[in-house]
Length: 380
Image (tube, rainbow, N blue to C red; front, side):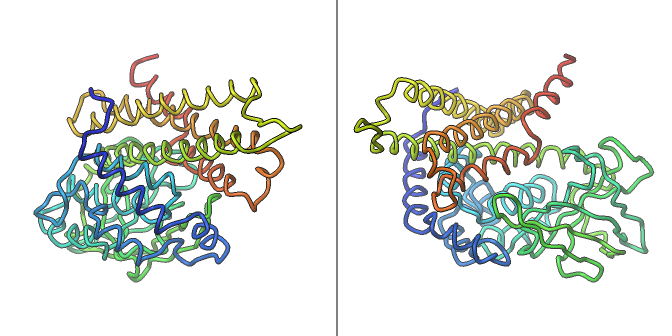
């Protein structure tokens, strides 16, 4: 596997980096946080990103996408992570659109994916529940047959970008099974349908989420994504793809924190000497650099595996998430430490990266959970 970007990917990377630098400074991120913005991002900026092809980068061309690979998407996500872009790449592209593109009906794909690619339609996936602890199969939300359709009742927690979503994808049990992947079905639900209510949440990094409650929400048979009772495996696949994409974002954030710290080491003086000349700080910076390079290898490996539908894709997802979780936390911890007292203040931007590191570390399973999943799969 090549661990270097192609010429086209280098152009894509530079385009994304220039866009983020010119259109989304950390000052904007601070303003969104301080204003307690209702949706936590800019719809106008999201449409600009869609015009660049980012929202549909991995969607087929016949649905308005670019038809590129996951490795190309990872390049964009890395740059988004560098700038802490809060726009809904994870919720709409990696979660919602992935589910529809992978197993939606032709009618669903034709009706929804072009609007996703254009930036007009926002999606959110509700899969976590109280006490589920990262396990997508621990579901108590029920979907009971009602005429020609279904009636949904239950509660989902930390539904990313749900405050802005036009459609929700909800996982629910449609059989008597209470555990395991069997008996789970994914449903498309209008976010403003009767019986749907939301309780707004702000994550530790100020991103938007909601507790979504469903009280007898009725949907038609055409709301089913995939097959009835067969949505468990689809949900796992979608979450793995989202985890891989999140790892690319985490890599970008790790690199930004390291570069910010490295620049500080080159300019900050103590006792009349640049602190970057201190051997102890050199060693610590070298460790962070090494870890980011290992994380890059893990991200590129899992992206290539998704593009080739490799048999060991799930293993590489676990490897990448464990590695990137550890790396992002290490990079931001060391950044705050090496910035000294100013690094502990809200006025300095490095704190935004530390908070994002904490949020992404826990998202889709922390490092320990992914190591355990890998170990269980291989009988350790």
